[in-house]
Figure 1 (tube, rainbow, N blue to C red):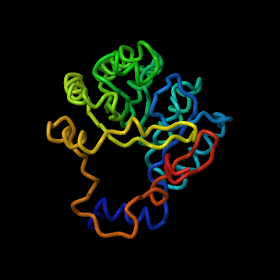
Figure 2: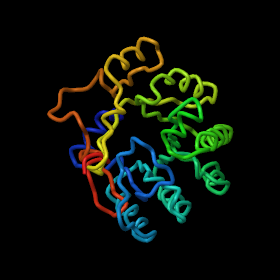
Figure 3: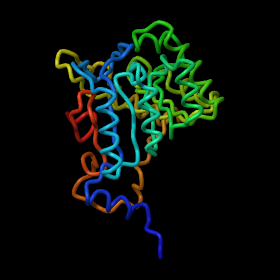
Length: 260
């Protein structure tokens, strides 16, 4: 029997609305105060029992990939238990983290039961820039230390950088730093509108001219959309709600993290 292509596989997933890829916000709390963050700390969180029940429902629904995020997911005292449960259920698990709270026990857990990836935020090539964006002194050094530890432990690490007016001049240096660390670099110029209407991030958005200069200077390579060269024309370009969704810290379900 001829094996179906991955594109055919995805088409079936979207046709039957299977939540193939689910972003799970374990908490809306965070230990940092990043100036560009779109999240707003909410009230109430799911219990461990509720989370494991939802993970079981997702497994039954055909979900294969889970992304644990927040806020900062490792702030939860039961994060290790939640991660173990997802791992035991067979999910391909990714953890989004700011990298500052990865203590010895969590790092050992990730090394012993490796995730598909740990995607970690890094906003500058210097402590002055990074800590200025996170609002937390020492966050740069702690994040770098944990990035090196995870790399040495054989964990697949992706460094994610939101490029903004405060760090665009360091973009090439951040790329060089990630190259030295031996980790994947994934920058983005997308800055989402905050959930809190009292906050504005318009002053942080990089101008089109500076984006073009970054591309010309090779400090930023525009990512290719998955399968773009073979993509069939479809009515919808976004797959939120078709093969992916987001579960908020309070249990509410959304098409994606920014479509509340």
